[in-house]
Each structure stands twice: as C-alpha cells, then as structure tokens.
Amino acid sequence: MNPLSNKDFTPVEELKNLQLEKLRRIIDYEYGRVPLFRRRCDERGVKPSDVGTLEDLAKFPFMVKTDLRDEYPMGLTAAPLGEIVRFHCSSGTTGKPICIPNTRGDIEVWADATARALAMFGVTSGDVLQVSYGYGLFTGGLGLHYGGELMGCAVLPTSAGNTEKQLMLMRDLGTTAIACTPSYFLYVIDVAKKLGIDFRRDTRLRHGIFGAEPWTDEMRAKIEDSTGITAHDIYGLTEISGPGVAASCPYCERSCPGLHIFEDHYYPEIIDPKTLEPLPDGEEGELVFTTLDRFGTPMIRYRTRDLTRLHTGRCECGRTMRVMDRIRNRSDDMLIVHGVNLFPSQVETALLSVPEVEPHYQIILTPTENLDLLEIKVEIRGEAFSDNIRALEELRKKVFYAVKQIIGLSPKITLVEPGSLPRSEGKIRRVIDNRR
Ligand code: DLL
Image 1 (cartoon, rainbow, N blue to C red):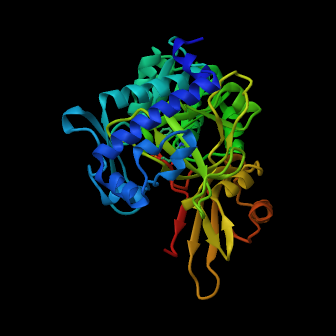
Image 2: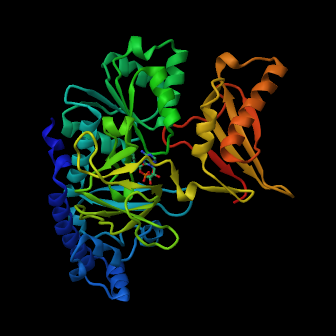
Image 3: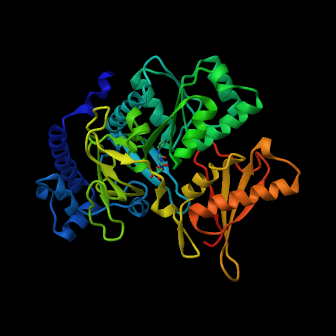
C-alpha cells in the first residue's frame, strides 16, 4: 500500500479525536482573525471554547458563497499576505468571482488529499498522468498536478483543449491516466474516433479521473465501454481546496454507492437545506464542509449546495473515511418546469438508454404566453443519422418516451446532427434557461 494512504485507515475513534482537536484549533483561529465570523458567532452567543464535542459544531454559523462574494477579494482571508503563496478563483454564472488565497501548508494538505485519491484509484508512481483539466485560476489542473507529483507520477500538464495534440502526446508518451471533466473526455473520444484511434489498441490509457461536474452512472458505463478504461470519480470545490475532497475507491465504484471523504482534512455534515438542521448519516440533504487544516481561507460550515448522503460503516476496502453518494445534483441546478422539479442528470440517464443518440444534449427553457417551453436538443449517433424522415420521426418518439418516463414532463425533442452541439474543454453548460 502507498504510505500516503495509511491515514485513510485511521481507526474511527482515533479519527474522531483528531477531528475534534483540529476543529477546536481552526474555530479558535478563525474567530481570532476573521471579523465576519467573529461577529456572527457573537450574535449567536457562541464562543470557540464551546466546542466540547464534534456535535457542538452545529452551534456555529454557516458560510455561503455570497459571503465570499461580499467579502471579495480577501475579507475572509485569515493568514497575512506574507503567508499566502497562491490564489485560486472561481466565477459562477453571475456576479463577482470568489477568491481563495492558499498558504504553503494549504497547498501541501491539498496535494496530500489528491495524492491519496490517486492511490485510491490504483494510480502509482509508475503511471503517466495527463492532466487535461484547465490550469490557472480553476483548481482542476494545478490540483491534480501537485497530487500527481506527490504520488510520483510522471505528470504531463497538457491543460484542456487542443485535443488532437492531447491524443498525440497520449500515444507518444504512453499516458496511462487522464484527468479531465467527463464531458471533455466525451469530446476526446469523438476526436479519437475521427482520427481512427482505438483506445484499447493504440494507447496505454487505463484510468480516467473525472469530476468537476455531475455525471451519471450511465455516462460512466458509456465511457468505459467505448475506451476500456476505468472511470473514477473525484470531487472537490474551490472553497474547500479543489479536487481531492473525496474520491471513489474500487469497492465504492462498484458496490457501495459513492466516494470516501478525506475526513481528516475536510469535516462533512449533511443538513436539511430548508430547516438548516443537521441530518443523521443515511439521510439526503445539503453537504456542508469545515476545513480542518487550511489556514489561508478556512471555511467553517460551508454550504456547498451539493445534494448527497453520508454513509457510516466499513467499506470493503477497509478505509474508515465516510462515504458520500456520488453528487448527481446541485440544489441550484434544479429547474422547476410546469411545477415539476427537473435535474439535468435525469435527462442524461434517459438519453443514455437510447443507443441511437449521443450523450450530447442541451436543455432549453423558453417563456411563452402559456406554459414555458421545454426543449431538449439531442445529437443523433453518426450511424443512426439518415435522411429517412420516417426513421427520424420514430427515433424522436423513442427519445421522447424515454425522457418523459423519467422526468414526467412532455418536452419538445429536437434531433440534431452529430457534432453540432457545443463541446467544452472544461465544465459543460447544458441548460439554457431563457426564463431568467
Ligand atoms: O470543480 C474542483 C474540481 C476540479 C473537482 C477537478 C474535481 C475535479 P469548482 O469549480 O469550485 O471546483 O466547482 C465545484 O463542482 O460544488 C460540485 O457541484 C461540482 N463537482 C465537483 N466535482 C464533482 C463530481 C471544482 N465529482 C462544484 N461530481 C461542486 C459531481 C462535482 N459534481
């Protein structure tokens, strides 16, 4: 076993003691240095000395993304500038970006977790790791880069884009593991097909390290079938460090449903997003994190908006770190159409059950005088594309019923030519909501 992974097997009682010790330290540190946090604690009448058990964390106030926006750029920074070695930023669809300054120690903790994620996937120092997440303010590229180097991989920092060159380097340098968004990897598969590259025959690729956006089990099966690689799930967010907050082990990937959280660094809670009360393990709600080892921009009870459940109990791999369900949905991705809740992942699951279409799709919502129009544009597979109108109409109906059965709404299905919908080198934008 890789020595980095030893921490994943810490006995539960020892882990809890360690978490409590770190929790006390970080709350005390944050209270002493971040005025917003201190003010909110004072308003609630809660003090750092009130942390007697891990459950006492629930007495403390939440942090949310708008706090980071309101305090932009550095109002929530706890360390002096002299201790900051790197900024990361993430911009949402609206408003100011958020800015997360990291200390050297923060980068080390992050690399430790990301290297442990790689170890979980079965990636070793003998692997060539092609990092095709974007490098820069986004955390994907540098996060996997530092984790990969700590693991001892030969890192190939291609960043995203220039797909033909990515494929050339993959073959010439014998890439065995690629890290990118699942939607970008779909595009890599398309381009490889056009160039006549067969992943099984022409490359040494074995691992795909996919995250940064929700992706379904059906998408995983599609990727694995068409390339012969194993698709692993890596989760994280800029506010809590970046990739490597949680990762899937070989057992989670197949039998238990999710990802181990590196709980010695990132303490998870699940809350009811309406009442904001903590929920017990096993119940679905919003994921909240407290960073136990980050000192640049510590986050106390940060609301991620990601919906999931935590599971206790031993995973077959023997790791003691709790498992969370794969993130299929974010609460703010939920669309309400004709009063019905709709998540893009439901559409993806439906489309992947129809072999004649590609998992490239766009959901478009347009206001009309009566009901809003829900249109789903779907790419037809090359082999299924024809000018036979009757065959196309049959296919359109097949897609319509597959989608309707899952979402319970009657969308307008528009079939489009292979390769005609936009592709992304990073996170894909699948929803165009013209109602906003
Ligand atoms: O996406 C960090 C990252 C980079 C993770 C590379 C994994 C790989 P942000 O841009 O701040 O950070 O976006 C964070 O992306 O709250 C989730 O909603 C979503 N997300 C991240 N990983 C996954 C995943 C990076 N494995 C937001 N599955 C998070 C589903 C994911 N959603």
